[in-house]
Image (cartoon, rainbow, N blue to C red):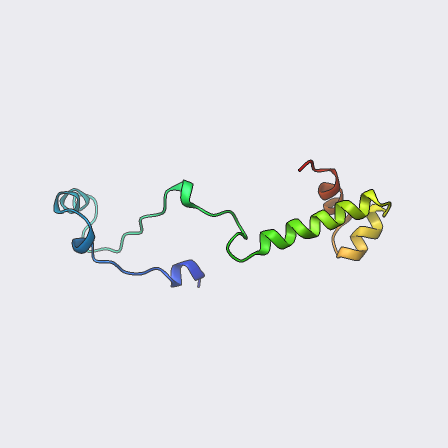
Length: 95
C-alpha cells in the first residue's frame, strides 16, 4: 500500500468546514470519503523528505568532478554501476 495513503487521517468535515460549504459539497458527494490534495506550491519534490535527492546530488557532483579529473565515461559507469548514457547525462548537464 502507498505509504502516503496509509498515513491519511480521517477528519469529520462537520468539525472543520463551515456548514455552507458542507451543503455545497453535498451537491456533489454525500457519505463518501473525499481526499482534498495539498496546493501544488506545498508539494515537495521527489526525495526531499527522505534525503535521497541530496544523496543523488552529492553522487552526481562526485561523478562530475571525477570526469573533470580525467576519468572516462566507461570508468565512471563501472565505478558507480550506472550506464554510460546515464553518466553522460550527469557530466554534460549544466547545474
